[in-house]
Length: 463
Image 1 (cartoon, one colour):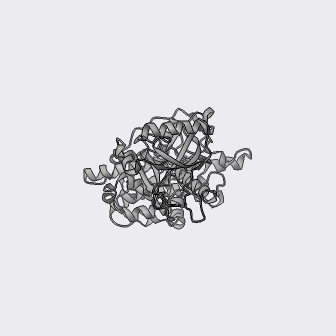
Image 2 (image 1 turned 90 degrees about the vertical axis):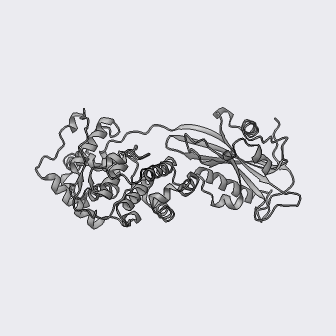
Image 3 (image 1 turned 30 degrees about the vertical axis):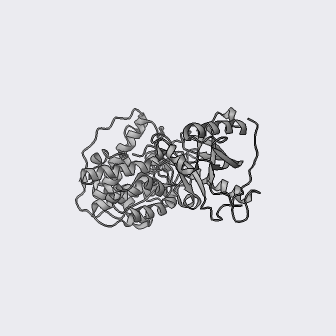
């Protein structure tokens, strides 16, 4: 399942599965819940599950949303690949945002084999702006693993052996593409089941999560498992929403214990289920960011008006950790007590000199160095305040020599202005770049055509 049950707050569906003989998965051992109020939650009325399935599937057939991944054509493997890509994109990202990314992705890599031939750099550029970049990395690694083995895994058990595929994604692919009778549990399904059975336990506790999977497994339709799973997610994404559930139009409201309790007791609301668990407060980090622009050939009054003589320095992040392997402007974390301009510049000068052999004072001619402003970027667990400055320099050794001096040339590169516009950057770094562009356009140091002056003009600090 998705590691965060809130991963897909705006979910999806697929066209009716075109297989007549669903394959039931072998029952997996499920640990019993220790919570007394959810120990006996099988439907009390014989045949209630069958009625619920029929009601939900009829509603889904009539009301499912038209989305591009529902129109996936081809054989089972092609549909499995489409399900995989869409499900991974939809984790932590809403449907309207995903649609365009999915269409561009499938246009470029329509099969798992075509994706396996891509580079991480290409995948990162296509993914830029979706966030949670580890998802893109796992998609590529998983595709290479599948192609190496020679066939797409067809069961949830086998799919879980693929890099980056967990219980939820495995269940979605297996049930939707291969008609295996297995459940899925994401944030929407948790909400629907919590309300159907009025579960008050912490939805993030392992015992409760296991019980959700058990209940979902009991409910899944044996003849249309893929469609039923999508119907559960569709219900949670539309009518059974977090704050404004449409109970009057819900196809399974007659089975909903949360609704029944709310009608009996005014103090109980359907939205009380599932229990809201307070999020951990994100930690606060602080970073100095220096947008280094290399101005070449400044013998003339100004550089090329198109910016072709101006290059931006980008650094590749480590291959592990946050935003692994992605490109950014020179950035380093600083203590909150040292976020003033003087300390930030001292730290940045030391960083450029140590890691990149750029000695701002000795190896370059500083044309301009200005503080641009701050940008706060929110990750799931980090609130990062970036203090941005622009430094335009003329390298005395030239860019080519600078690249040759670098021990590992894959760790840095110089990108011209036109390439910066089209390059895939994280949303945070793209925001920083746009801040710098806006600053230069408004600055006294830039002409109406966006040209860079040759005179040294900088707010120098005594160091």
